[in-house]
Amino acid sequence: MKKFKVTARQVTLYEKIVEANSGEEAFEIFYQTRDEYDIVEDNGLEVESAEEVDDEYI
Image (cartoon, rainbow, N blue to C red; front, side, top):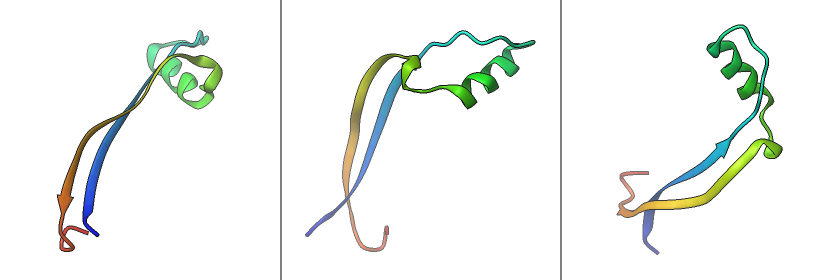
């Protein structure tokens, strides 16, 4: 059986209101507290490429 390296990207848009003293602090708070309820748009998983590789690659 052949081996393939598959590269994929998942694009998910989140929005959340947080209280913070700066943009950096707001990002940290968001990052630590985000969950599925904050998802605005989920474009699913998009496969970018599937390249055959040999055993030396692994």
